[in-house]
Image (cartoon, rainbow, N blue to C red; front, side, top):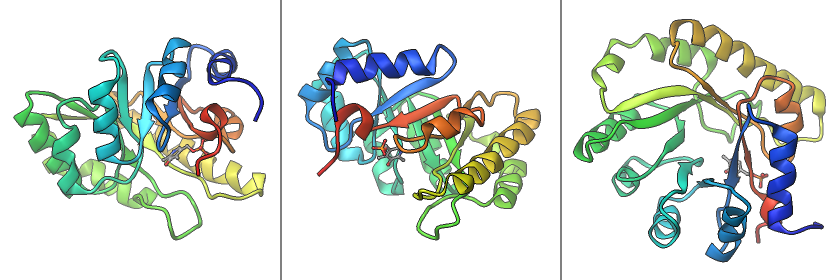
Length: 219
Ligand SMILES: *Cc1c(COP(=O)(O)O)cnc(C)c1O
């Protein structure tokens, strides 16, 4: 891949404009790489392991916003509860309750997205559209004062078939528009990665999660 991390950040910011947020997915990358992005003005970083994110949070500048983009195990929530800015992949009530409990302990309201399964692959986590609709109607949600649901997140199938990716992102876009009517606090639609963010931009994404196109391939 050509260009420096700084150049990649700048060109993504230009391409995405003001209305789409860039999460720089820095998993497996060393602090020096994150600092290059930071020096180019990047402040939102995404990680997929709680321990690694916490180590980075402890050693890097405090104005970084840390996003957990990966699958979260319930027993790991407590480690990130003091500082995490947004948890992207909440897929069940049990996890949301734990986030709420840990938010309360830390006197914080923790922002969360609900993960929807749009991919035809079985390997992806998330709620089906019908499960999401049922979830949002659950009366227990209003008791959870230390979490805030900010929107939806999904991953498309990893494929070269662009039509399929369009179909999957369209499902999420429709679902976001539908649920936003009853959830006016929704403001984030997190979809699009290095390989498919251009398609996500055609379906109303508000937040893309880019790793390898900024930092290079992971080993
Ligand atoms: C790793 C990861 C990304 C970034 O993937 P790239 O293809 O490197 O851009 C985005 N979202 C999630 C959930 C990830 O785990």
